[in-house]
Image (cartoon, rainbow, N blue to C red):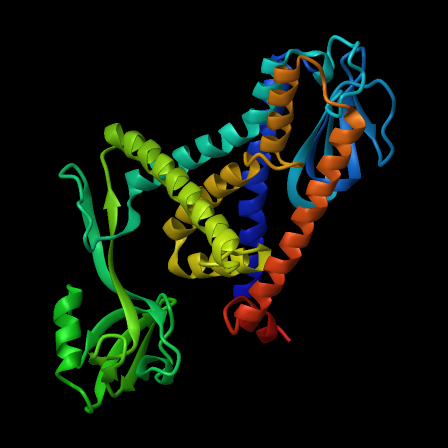
Length: 388
């Protein structure tokens, strides 16, 4: 059941993020006097659709699109979010007053930017709701505002070194450390000092993993990374941080912009590393990698899923607004060039660049997916194998 829940949750999260994005384009286009030819749930081919005829009556439509209809509301076969088809979005029908190509540069920029804006708003809303309930947050070296309430403090494992005593004992990332030799620790430093004092001796750990209690034994040894006795794990002290409803919205907005800043810095460092040293630093996740993150979040609980959804919404917003062909940011860039030149760019050239950009993005997705598969030794694929 675990893999099924992970897959359903993954597609649900992706669907919400994409639908909110497309709804942004839809609302901005309609408010700007631009005809939306179709709003689809899922991606084509179409299962069926509905539209209102000139008499205001709803009509059914199949896979084939009839000519000259109002907006078609469709259900499509591929369950990946949705799409909005806007009249004149490729530069055609510029003489029609309800065409995208007929509108001013400013209005077209507004329509193109609306999807990204809605993704940012979605993250703000999710984080605000989460902060009213209580979101998991690392507490070490973190200043918690006086107005906040901290509950359910615990120590979790966030990384296990290969070949370490912890790895040999079967400890995994996201395990909650309940006790060591029946001693309960609420701070990391006293725990580390205790392990350091037990070099060469067997210690018994009580671990909570996916709601189950697990007992494990290991022998601490001197680690070359710290030159102290240790288990070979990275630990973090976390707790649920909540705020009163009347300030939660402010912290939700603040954390959203902090995410945006962190993601932009991360992209800068990745690109800088690729240019300077031709090396890829950090972890870059594709669909498979994101699915494993969703699976981990599902195991940890609803609040972690909520937090991950907000983060993914921000990441998609930032990526989609990069000035790269085929992305919304690339289309906005072409409009800026049009404004400077005071005349449109040749549509064939722009279309070719967008197609080339899309092809490069698909190649990048394939490369990242291959890296995901090569990197994953458990998690998502262990669950898949367990089904057969």
